[in-house]
Each structure stands twice: as C-alpha cells, then as structure tokens.
Length: 218
Image (tube, rainbow, N blue to C red):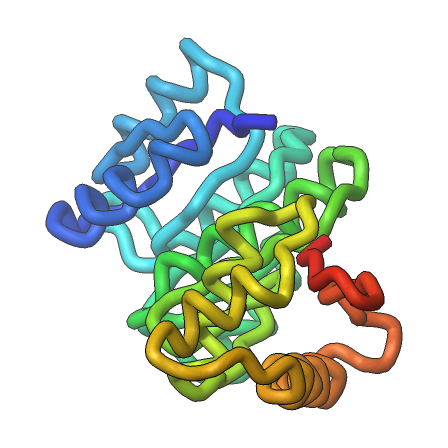
C-alpha cells in the first residue's frame, strides 16, 4: 500500500533527496514551513507526517502538540539533528510515533515509515521489510553488517524474493570461475543466518532452505 506522506522540512536539499528516494514507494508532498503544511493538510488527507523539529515559523514539538490537541491521530516521525534524550522524550510526550536523528540512511527512514504505518494504521502484517545498501542489510529498520559475499548472496535472494533460487544458480553468480562446491553456499547461508539471529532473535529465519534444491527469501 502506497501511503500519502507529508514531509515538513526546511532544508530544501535534504527534502529534495528524500522526496526523490521515497516517491517510488509512497506518494509524498513537501512543505518547508508550518504555514505551507497547514494549507496542504486543509486540502488533503495524509497517512503519515515526517516532521523536522526546527522550522522557521514554529517549533516542531509545538506543531505536534497542536496536531494531537486537534484530535488528529495521524502518525508522525520526527527527523532532527537534536539527539539528546530530553529532546526525544519531549517529542514522544507530545505524541511522536518515532524519532530519527540526522544524518540517517534513507533506507532506515523507509523501514521506519513502513513499521510505523503497520502499527498505527492497522495495515496487514506482511513479509519483513528487507533492504540492502552496499554491505548493510536492513530488516524492519534493524541494521545488519555483512561481508562482500554475504551481501552478494542476499542481493540474489532479494532479486528473486518469494521464489526458490537453486544452489547451482547461486554458486555460478558468486564464484563463476570455480568448480561447484555446495558446502561453500551452506557456510555462507549459515553465517548470514547467525548474524540475523544475533540482531533479530531466533524467530527470524527469513532464509528458507529447500533440501537438494536451494534457498528462498521470505
């Protein structure tokens, strides 16, 4: 489901980058001030707000408080350079659903958007949100560092997500010059699973094994 998102951010360069990144996944509109945002919210209904705490015409927490006092239950993710625990607690007390400190990875922001939407909008729970950026895998916003070969294997499984990829196809992609050795794939999968379970717990086996055939990312 594509969400209708309002980004309230006065850093125009950052805003442009976020809009460009998020527009393939969700419908997103941008305002640089509270006045602009207020006008947009009058004209349209949004599913989620991305809110900078420091705006030229209002404090972000004041805007949060105003939203909650007007009985608007729209989910809000605060994005800010303010990283103190006091600032975080203040935003949560005013009704923030999540808090993300700048600078951040757009992939992490996307994962948090999807997680907040599932919690707040009662969207159906589907497969885990999995992203890969260079050698970093994100599962529902949790960062897992991989080595080069591990990342290459995850990339292959992501490309064919929901389908079983044969061991032969995986081996040919990872080691095109070598003779087939099934054990090398098994060891690689074991290492990835170990890293996932360390961060996500034992109920997070998203890589399924199909004996004698291959692997599937769920």
